[in-house]
Image 1: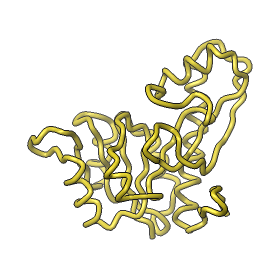
Image 2: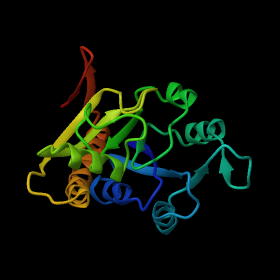
Image 3: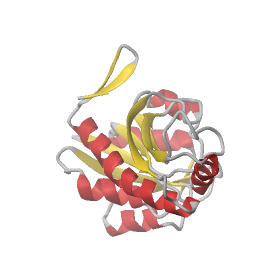
Length: 202
């Protein structure tokens, strides 16, 4: 069984999708981490008896720095870190510690519409203004460059008839709620492999 830590900054809809759709015998959410004390994801973790941690740079009560967090996640024996709407850049030492064990979901079809500052509605506004006819979601490995790691899986959605970035956001979120649990499920089955520098989902 894969033990998962999910990083979230907001309401946690992708966290809930993983929780609801991935069998616990394959992959279980064992920790929820946020940079915000009050958010839907932390509330969800509390309601479902999942340990939660606040991460930040300040040495305050109940707030970890990333070195402390690494220690805690190693104690839990986390196999996979899932960034599901986490809005802070992960430090290099954390990425080194969990190399090829950190994945992120991005609300567009990478390598387009990614990079520093491209998150949330900023992505959808840029896609809308580009007049692109297709958008979607991408799950990729996390490396030390924004939205740069190897792509694991993608799904596209038709946006040729949308009239606002908000419509794109709604359609892409539905795709995210399908794609991210699918990828986590495949990790739980140990069916995500890297072959000849490409990621293959078996």
